Image (cartoon, rainbow, N blue to C red):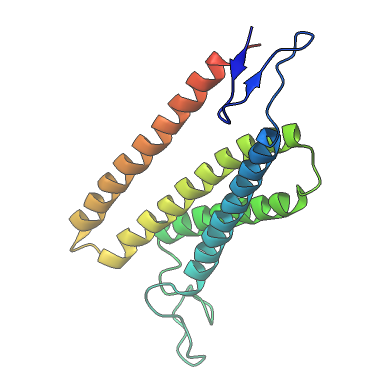
Length: 186
């Protein structure tokens, strides 16, 4: 039995093993390392956006020590009592810390063997999906604060559009992962 490789070199199985052409393992390792690098960059970007978002809140802060409204403290955001702000803060923090955890793990896997890197990337990718979903929820929560009660329909419209896009994307990705997992030999 003979096999042709992408390099147009005939390869024969020897002792039940298929001989891979030279360079194929190197190409696969480089591809995996590129995926790790790309995921690290995305994780850093999400962490940066999530970190910056908390310090660039819409509205103002209580900054006059002589005029602190009841229930507020000096330096507190005026939107802090809103439930939308609470949702924003929780999901923004989740996105930030998941992304930072991914960065820590990704920068530590340099010396790990290839099989372990592949398994790790599978988990890391799911964590990045989660971070993207959380940063989306944080954004949508702020939309409700920014538009106010008068233009609530605008925030609802953005929520519907964002939810459809994210649910479709993540649902499709989950479907592909599950179908790929079912096709793998045990």
